Image (cartoon, rainbow, N blue to C red; front, side):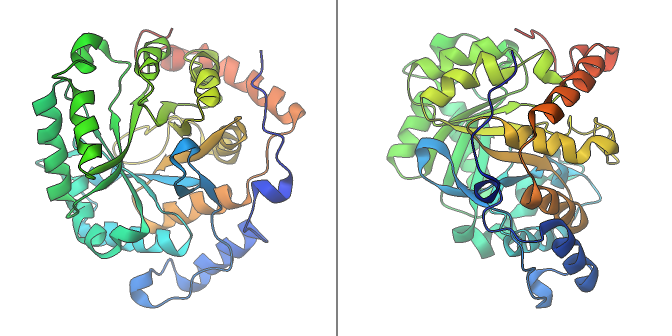
Length: 339
């Protein structure tokens, strides 16, 4: 069954946008991708703002997937330029994790630190924990705060919660000495505002996270190919919408194709893939991984000008996705189980 789309008007869907694609492209060409630090005037068009479900927080329709900041060639100055430009474009949602990067290439959170210290009050800052225990989660939380030079986080996810090898027994995670207890305490102390769960695989496992009523946001792998396999849209998000959870799509372009750059989905599907994600009922944010100003401006232009897929476009894209989903590289693109 095809996912029911939001009954948004075109005006509502692109609120705050006028002449988006052309205007933003022209602005980028005129400034050469300049950032706030250069004093360049921001473009006339900005990425729309939405409410992130029951959190009530106002966030941008586009989120920056900061994993690519962990690549060796990306410097703290590059990150600073990208994040300042993001604010000019109306993009304030930043998604990162302690494991993005390495000691050799540099960790994304550390590279973000200098910029976050400058713009903390202007961004919605998201990171993750992948420690099932209370002490381990607090250790990661303190590490993230130190790296990003802040005293608070807007949202922290149970990272890749569908991976049972990583998270183990639910009684541990949600018990007295588990990760959820640590996040609950962090929220009480004002260190964390909201709690979420992210994941690429095993959609039905997420119901255990939702049962406690403490999850505010879900971020899952969603694109027009894996709708035919993992299908978070129906298996989890249908319930999450009734709970008014904030819904965030990742792997919108399939995820990184390789460390050098590019996405798993072909470039010809770039705009369609983003429009598919933004057309899903109840979605707030599409997170797209990027590493520089040029990639940011391209994504912002498409998101700002995106129109909901028509039924005919949705059907045509579903057929393309079904064909791709049967290919070896897509059958279990993000791991098993699929159910």
